[in-house]
Each structure stands twice: as C-alpha cells, then as structure tokens.
Image 1 (cartoon, rainbow over the protein chains, first blue to last red):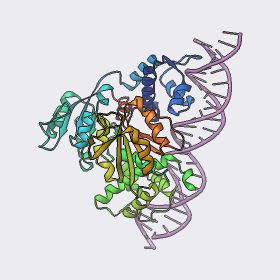
Image 2: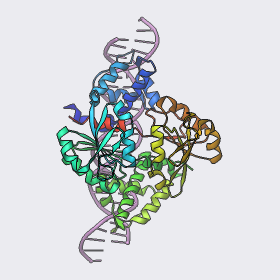
Image 3: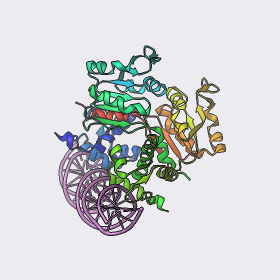
Length: 206
Length: 206
DNA sequence: TAGATTGTTAATCGATTAACAATC
DNA sequence: TAGATTGTTAATCGATTAACAATC
C-alpha cells in the first residue's frame, strides 16, 4: 500500500490545506490554484502540487483545482469524511475547557466520554458531559471501540493514563499534559503545549 | 551573529529539551546524558548533542550534562529566564479558557491585558482579568511595550486583529483561531489548532 | 587506568525547489 | 490558438545519523 510510503510531513500539511480550502469556499471561491493556496499559506506552489500528487491528480492543467472536489478528496484521504468518537481523560481546569470547546464537534470529532479520578468530579457534569470514574475507562473504551483519546491530566499521571488507554485499544492520543509520552510504534501521539510555542518565539525577540 | 544561522527546527526542539530537563530535575536526577534524554523523547542522542553544540559545550565527556546547569543555559538561550507580558485578544469561550489556564504564569508568561470587541464582555472579568475594549488595544500595547500576544477571536476577525497587534508593536503571536495569518517576516506566528492534530492522526487509523 | 560520553566531522538520507513537457 | 497551470523529474538544499578522536 502506498500509504506507508508517504512521508508523515506530507500528511501533516494536508489538514492545513483542507482548512485553507474551507476558508476559500466560505469566501465564495469555487476554484483555486497551487499558487493562490501557497501564497495564503506561505508555502511554495511546487510543494503543494507535490504533496497532492501523492494521492492522485486532483487538478486540471490551465485551470487549477475545484475547491469542493479537492476538499472531498482530502477529507477522504485523511479519513475525516466520517465522524469520530473521542474519549477525554481529566476534568480539571484544562479538561473542562477542552470538553467545552466547540471546534471538535463542528469538525467531526465527538467527545462521548469524560473520565476523572477525583471522586469530587465523578457524577458531575462538565459541559454537556457526565464525568465517569477512571475505573470505567477500560470497559467503556473497549465496549465503544473508541480509538482516539485526549489526555488532560497532570503531567505525573499522563503516562499511566496513556498506558491504560492503549491497553483499552486507543490508537491516537492528543496529549495536553506537558510531558512526552512513550508509546508503542503503532500508537500515534500529538502534543498541545502552548508554552512550547511561546518559548520558541521568545528566542527571536530582543 | 550566530543566531541567524541556527535553523529554526533546532530552536523548536530546545523547549522540548527544557521541559524534559525540568521533569528529570523534579524526579531528583542531577545529571543526564544525550542518550537518556533521547530515549525519553524519542530523539537520537546525536541530534541532541548536535542541537546543543550550536550554543556551546554544555556537557562533559564521560559524565554527560548537569541538569541544573543545562536548564539555565537553555533558559537563557530561549530568553525565558525572564518574565514576559502577554496580551490576549478575545474573551469568548476559547479566550476565557486561555485566560484561565495556569500553565502560562507558571512558566513565566503573564497575561496582563485582555481585549474583546463585544460590549457585553467589556468591563466584565474573565478569570482574574478585567476585559478591555478592543479600542484600547493599540494604546495599551504600545504604552506597555508588549511584544507577545495571543489571538482567540473567530477566524474571520483574526487577520484584522493581527494587523492591529503588529501595528502596535507585537512581534510574536500565538494564534488560536483556525486560520493562517499573513504577517511581515520580522513577526513570528505559532498556531494552536487541536483539530489539525487529530486530523493528522486519523489518516493512520483503519 | 578503563569506561563512558561529549562535540564534531563526514556520510547519508530525505525534503524542497526549479524547471518543463503535457494539456486544459 | 495563446495563456495558464498541472504533475513530475532532476537538481538542490538542508537535516539527521554514524562514527570517532578527545577527554573527563
């Protein structure tokens, strides 16, 4: 299969293209070119064409890409033409904010269960969600066949939670805890730590 | 100056190293090696040594790196040995969550002003912050000499806000709005869009 | 000293870009 | 047709890794 041969760095740009295409569509455009897209994103047109060509010829010489069509193709490549169930672990300040964030559902990622280890929180509601005991994590995730989870617990508990999630069948983790996770190679992890981004920018400030 | 010659990809890893060193220190370690650090981070030891060597010889043959010393050196390189003032634009759901997040202050980034365009929000409190009208943005940021801002407004207003921030002197922007910003090349932008990370992982799921 | 690990060089690997034939 | 833009190849550029002398 071709999928194993496509560099991850290419995959990482597809969601960015998709987001820009959504925007162009919203603005009323129907067609775009690698040049226009590249200018918006600060990416060379050659790179965009090369990235897209891994998955097929989506454009037409002389005219460019039909935005609606390209969007649909990219959504299928990324497997985001479907809806995904997501588990959230941690219902503290950070977890609650994540649970309330509307951007997930709007783009096809539905949080369907929220876990916390604190008896104070279990049984309470966070946003629209009923917080469950972490003891239910394995059974709930296994039964529902959930493959994606978000971790929003303190750093010191994140690795343990990740291990539990993986044992229960989770294969993709979005980690908000400020710590690196060690996971088997068939499990994917992405990190959100806004402070890292700030620290990367201060280097360049006077 | 050497700084312009160091690849940005190297800079982007320094905060990750720093975070791992913090953790090692918390766990009671006093010394580490490129091998140990690399194993934790899933990065080759050669890469860590090479990255660090851009800034000086921080280690000792045979023994490795003193964690406390290396932390201090990296903090200086990244300019995070000091405290930074940060402006936040947008006090809606997302902006409020950002304002309440404790991780910023803990690591030296102090939100000192919050702006919103909605008269409903101006004058109210969000977390510990008094929300100001966006009309005050330019004067407030200029007077305080703020160089870092976070954008948490709807996508359609993000570019306009960025333009205002830059005109007022901001040189580093952390953008939570799901849209690419076009900025002059002496302005740094980083993006936080958790959905992008999820979309990048679903590609690999069955 | 023997063992370990750095800092650095050279070799390898991979990603980006330039260029252009194909073609709409 | 003339103009525009794709998809793709080859060339360039840059980043990672392997290896090892230096040295603690």
